[in-house]
Amino acid sequence: MSLELATHLIDIIGAFLLITMIIILEAGDLYRAIYTMAVQSIFIALAGAVLGAATHNTDLWVIAGLTLVVKVLVLPWLLLRVIHRMRIHHKIDPLIPVTTTLAIAAAIVMLAFYLSSSLVLLKQVITGNALPIGIALMLIGILVMMSRRTALMQMVGLFAAENGIFFTAMAISQGMPLIIEIGVTLDVILAALVMGVIILRVKSSIGSDIADLDELKG
Amino acid sequence: MDQTLTRWILPLIQVVLLVLLGPLVTGLIQKMKARLQCRRGAGILQPYRDLLKLLRKGTVQSDTSGSFFRVVPVLVLGATCAAATLVPVFFAPVTAGHAALLPLGDALLLAGWFALARFLTAIAALDAGGAFGGMGASREMTVATLVEPALILVIFSVAIVAGTTDLRVIAGHPVGMRGSFGAADLLALFAMLILLLAETGRIPVDNPDTHLELTMLHEGMLLEHSGPGFGCLVLAHHIKQIVLIAFVQALFFPWKAANTNPQALVMGLGAFILGTLALSVFLAIVESTYAKLRFFNLPQFLSISLLSSFLAVALRLL
Image (cartoon, rainbow over the protein chains, first blue to last red):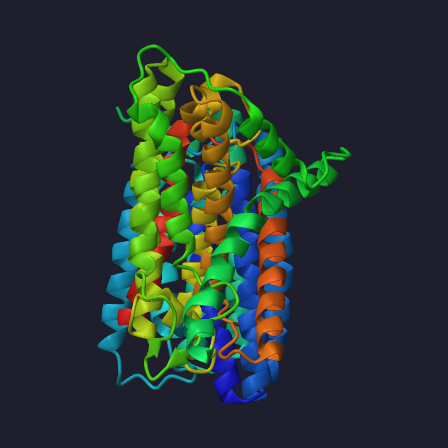
């Protein structure tokens, strides 16, 4: 696969990543957010595969496969399981109105493009919009974590931000070394497990969501 | 002779085609929807039969409405047909930078004609004095304030590359000239598909089948109309739908005939039919798989399209 074709494909995958991120940001329902996060991870895996085919780096194929298994199958399954165990209502109540969040997201994307234009000295493997879109995804993921009260939605935001970091890493290097990528993936699984356990424990011991904990001050 | 053909005859054929095929697309979508819901459904020619039935009926008018009320259906139909003249269907030649068709207007005027038709429909609904008409008009206008900025942004995102807002030039560009289908195109197309649902009054936004008064937007405004006038408004809605479908294709899939070569014309027409079928399938699937949104959740849904069209413009400029 030629590098031009790869650049074009990564460009289109970047647009799909932005679209899925907008849907996660807009989702009023935990199920929809989780499924969209899984779809976004499919696109991340595709991006890894495209870059692997373009640079003949077999590590990237392994990373793409790992993403497919962990982020598309395991993590959504884990989140859905926590939902079933908690028997919570799956409506998301945002701290600030969703339309405001969308406006902030637009500002974030502009900011990401502005920031990345000042990073021209950084040598990019995939030229084009991959770097700004990666930065934008990361920041919007953090925005999701900040603006939602439900702990599960904050987890979805964390994984979406992680997708952004992965995409950024692909844009500025030919993917991270395999050992680091495996370490990061294991960290993500571990984090998801720990967070899932904590959410369930908090739910079973005080019968409410993490978000209500700040009402406990003395 | 050739001049007359390209300037007058082919553009006129395109308009007539859009007007005649409008009800067929609605019938097709309804048939597919019925099949997806395991019903037999009415034949795809049903919208034509409905229109004929309406044209044969008499007119009943509310006492409060004035003579303007009777003119409105014709004006709305006229505005929608005028919008139909602006969209290339299968033929879009470009000679030395400008199109060789009827120079009637550009994509922004298309949005303008739709806005005029919407305004007239709403005014007539208020004029008739019915409670549902007023409520429908108020809701339709609320949706319009969210849809129109996004529509204009989608137009701009394509116009920035093409260098003009003239749809005939935009659609006349060979695909290679505009560059390949990139990230900004994709975002704009996503925004436009949501707008298509909103503008054609399809399910997440409005329910075209319902006469449950509390949920309707567009139908609510038409309640007070009857007979041929109602027929005109229904036909205008069919035409608006196919014009929007042709508009999506002109913006994002510009496979049009560039000259009067019969083979190119047939290819252009085939591309148009395929594109229309694809978008009809999209509309039918969305209608059968989604539930109608609560009215107060609509701004949130439509702001997705506003945001992604904004991002499309931003990607072009940055």
